[in-house]
Amino acid sequence: MGATRGNGEVGEEIYEQVLMIKSIPLRVNYKGKFEVQGEGLMPLSKLDEYNEKNETQLKNARNAAAGALRNLDVKETEKRHLITYLYNIAYIEGKEFKTQEEIVAFIKDNAMPVSKYHKKFTDIEELLKEIDAQKEERLKEDFLTDGMVIKINDVKTQKLMGYTNKFPRFAIAYKFEALETSTRIIGVEWNVGRSAKVTPTALLEPVDIGGVTIKRATLNNLDDIKRKNVHLNERVLIRRSNDVIPEIMGPLKTDEEVYDIEQPEFCPYCHSKLYKEGVHYFCPNTLGCKPQLVKTIVHFASKEAMNIDGFSEKTAELFLEKLNIDQVSMLYDLKEEDLLKLEGFKEKKANNIISSIQNSKTVELKNFIYALSIANVGVKTSRDLAEHYKTVENFLNASFDESKDFKYKDTIRKWFEGVDMMEKKDIENLCYTARLAIDESDMDAFTKKFNDIIKMISVVNELDDKDIPKTYQVNEYKEILLSKDEVDSEYSLSKEDALKNAPEEKFGFFKLKRVVEG
Image 1 (cartoon, helix red, strand yellow):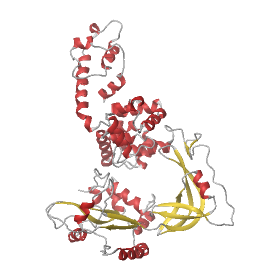
Image 2 (cartoon, helix red, strand yellow):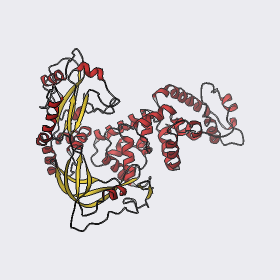
Image 3 (tube, one colour):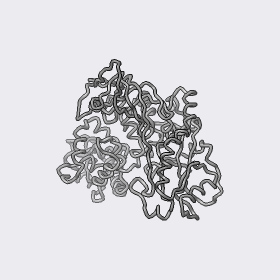
Image 4 (tube, helix red, strand yellow):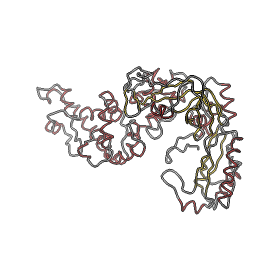
């Protein structure tokens, strides 16, 4: 099988896409089971060939390779002519390695591709000389590289050094200095992100850095523009940080006329009046601004959130424009026949996405909280919130007075205060209609409660006019019965006791009803 790294624990299955990498053998000599790790790359020459032959242009080789490995259409993966270099054995049955050299030799002996560049050093001075030499040598390669990985050779020492939360302590990713050149700012494009922040991107006269044509560069906000003192029609120094994101460093002297870059007053997409908070400007139209909706849906479907495979920004735009999907809960109403009406969707692709959407219902609470796009709440904070609140109900009904010592209470309070009724209903639909975000630790309790609710419904539905007090309509009284929050094993399920124990007021009916209908 083949899989992406994912979050370090769970990745995406990409076996069919991996088969499109021709340098990976279908059979190996070693008979035991093992896991090999590596990088998928798109050669720069293949990137140029692809862009010459296809109307849809790929921006850079790194994103093109990542997109190819996640693309549900393996014919598209094949068209990108990926290569791979394998470098590590994460697991193996019946064999042990003493050094990193032995690992690389094993991979090579089994006819799997490894980088031609592997060198061993016995002192730091030799290593530093090699780093200097590779700063220039790397530019001769047909693929992007922004550094060198330096590892301890002895495997026993590697195991003793161990890992941090994200990285091995026995390896260093040494980054080369970013490449720099100059060009002219010919325009500024204002973009709206998932958080409603409106940020500028500089449009540049095309310029080559390290074999890649650069047409755009980062500008963080208007204060950053003023601090760097850059203007329209001005020559600027740009740097390609980590060989991916170009950054404007500052202006160069020019005799030509330059013009100030002005902050727009209205959103460039939905034309709502922008507001300022700190150094940033924001669009208030969270439910009607297309870029915000698209990015919110894409984030919701992302790996660390609901983990809906094959869900790209292009897919989100298509769903928004053609299927009127303007709330994330509407994803769970989609059917395969809806997707088959869309351009580029055949039976297999449609089925894969629908299956992935349904599979996302088993997501844990931490992933669901992250999916909600709460400002300043990343993966770690989502995990902390899930551990604190334990269940979806606790989270959505958070009592901030009771959480005086909880460090995230202000973040969550601010988010809830900013959530309007329409968004709140959307979240409730997600929690209760689709039955999402039930944390694994609470699954037994949820199953028990859900089964009791089902029993309660069967009893209540047997009621007729003669059982109902004259002051109530039948359906209304049934709703009152079903609104009781504490449905558990102590709640007697006979018809007589159901009538006797009926609550006097409605509360929690929407919540309970949503669980039941789901």
